[in-house]
Structure formats: structure tokens, C-alpha cells
View 1 (cartoon, protein in one colour):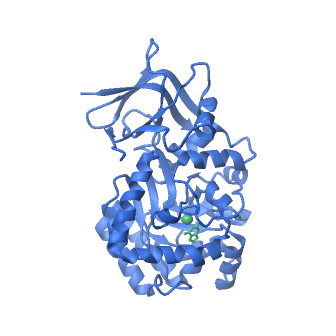
View 2 (cartoon, rainbow, N blue to C red):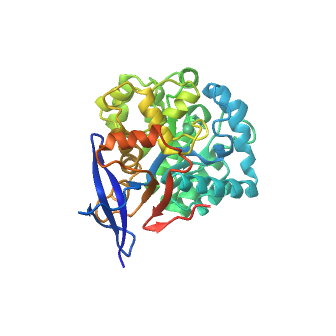
View 3 (cartoon, rainbow, N blue to C red):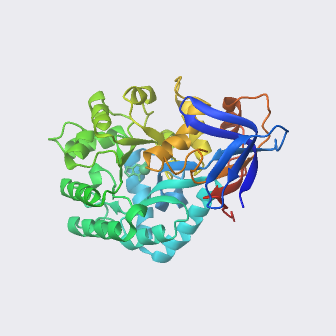
Length: 398
Ligand code: GUN
Ligand code: FE
């Protein structure tokens, strides 16, 4: 039997458009798909707002317990002093199980039902993170074969062997994940690109986040034209690659990203926390490079995509940063760049019923921008999500 949910519906269409339906209803069929979206004649439930579930395009599971903790440091000292020692704890399987459960619970509680997730270098830990994943997405075993602490650094061949095994065993729930150029030899990056190609698998990595990081890449790869060129020469860029940050890319680098069809995960809360700078939003839109929002937990302090939307609106002084575009970049745009555009991200008939019921009074005289801004700037992110539905099934929040 089809089920119906009522409230004020916000349905993202593109970066300039969100359809708003006051007195709306959302009909979900027996297989958990959107059967119908429409408007009732009578006033129905004005006390709740219905939006698509969030998509987080870049988040680190093993940084969950230290999220936000070491903000104020810049990227490289933050990684070396705090993050890599934290990630080394994940050689212990009990620890992985404990944190993974709390991590996924927290994502669901905040309405994120699709994500691309960074794991750790440990193959067993990554398997556990994938086995426990209750949402849509992929988890990647970090590849680090140079310039890394002993506890995390692997031999090139062993790292690639693990990645290949994970591609075989987990197919579309695993993602090839070279951490970033300073942690990887050219050999391992080329090997990772070959495996991704063999299995038609997605790739994720970090690119051009911080000035000291960029200077380090220049020193490590003196023969490459740019940081982006390192990944290009390794064969890592393409339509199934998502690179995090791109705060300091030159026009030549953006041209490569555009030409290869590479996507960007934009992480404004992380960039503020580590003082990395501001992604050049207008230039990236001018270059027509597809991007979407991400928390980048643990540099980003919160798992809530509402917090990322708030920060996106606060840091960009641009006509391209509007409440409407923020909702699009936190939902449909994310689904599109991660390859789930036909499956989730908005309320198109036939898509999976992935949606949130928010505890919020929506005044019938207010437009979508007003309501979204109230969500981002005037709500409690920990309590606003009243119910979460994945594939039409309510997810119990503990
Ligand atoms: N660059 C390489 N590794 C990381 C990481 O874990 N977090 C962030 N923000 N940037 C990185
Ligand atoms: Fe990151």
C-alpha cells in the first residue's frame, strides 16, 4: 500500500530553482520509490517541512571522534600532529566497529543518507566500515606509501594489492582513495588509476587545499606543471573522480579538471577551520566544473550538512551563493557528482524515497529562500530532523 507524507515540500531542481509546495504531499510506493508529489487543496500539516536527504561528498570516518577538536592549526601540522596518530588507532578492529556504528548513527540523525567516505590504510578496518554502512555510498581504503608515519605507511605493492581485493569484493561500495600527492609515490598513483580503470571504479583524493601543501607537492614532483598535473599524469582524473577542496587552483588547473570531467567536493567549514582559504566559487561555476558540498569531518567540525550550507552562505559573497543553491549543492548536486543522480537527490517520480521530515513551522506566505535560511541560520541541527527515510523506510535514530 502506498504511503503519504504531508508538509511543506522543498524540491531542488537546479542551482537556481527549488520547487516549493505548500500543503504538499509525497506519495511513496511499495518498493520505496516516489510515486507522486503534489498539492492538497486543504491546509494540511503546516508544522513540518519535507526535503530530500542530504548527500555528503567527502567525509573521513576515522576522524569522527576528533572532529573540530584541533581547528586553528593549518593542514600539514594538523595532519601530522593530530590526525595521523588518531587514524593509527584503527588497526584495532573493536575500535573500528565502535566508531563506525556511532558515525553512521550520527549521519542518519543529521539526515545524510548518501556519502563518499574516506577510511584508513588498514584493509580490514575498511572492510568493517563497508560491512557496517547502512546508507548509500562508498568507503575508500586510504593509500599512503611515502612520507607517512610508520604505523600508516605501506609498501607500494601491498597497498595496490589491498585496493584490488577491495574492488573485487565490494564493487560499488568501495572507492579508490589515494590520500593526496604528498602521501603517494607516482607509482602507487599510477597503479591506483589502473585499478580504478580496470573496475570502472570511482576515485577520490584531495587537491590544492593549502599553500604549504602545494609548495610540498612542487618540491616532491618538480617535473610536473602543477598539483593538478601530478594527478593528470598519474591518470587519476576523469568523470568518476571527486577531488576535495580546489581552493587555490590556477586557471590552467581548472581547465584540466573541466576537460577531464573531474568533480569537486567543496568543503567550506573545513576550509574555515584550517584557515585554508575560500574556494573560488564564481570561477569554478564559470569553468562549468560540477561540484557539491561536503563536511570533510574531522576538519569540518559537524556532520550536519545544514552547517555546511550555513557556512557556504556566509563565506561566499556571490550571486551564486543563495539558500536555493545551497540546498541544491547539499542534495541533488551531490547525488549527481557521485553518480546517483537518477536514484536520489530530489523528488522526481521513480527515484528512491530518501527524505527528511523536519520539525519546522513553514509560513505559507514565505518563499523557499526564507525557509531554507531559517533552516541553516535559525535551527538546532541536532533536533531539527524529526524523521529520516531511506528507500521509503524510516531509519530509527537512537
Ligand atoms: N589532505 C590529506 N589528508 C587530508 C585529511 O585527512 N583532511 C583534509 N582536510 N585534508 C587532507
Ligand atoms: Fe578530507
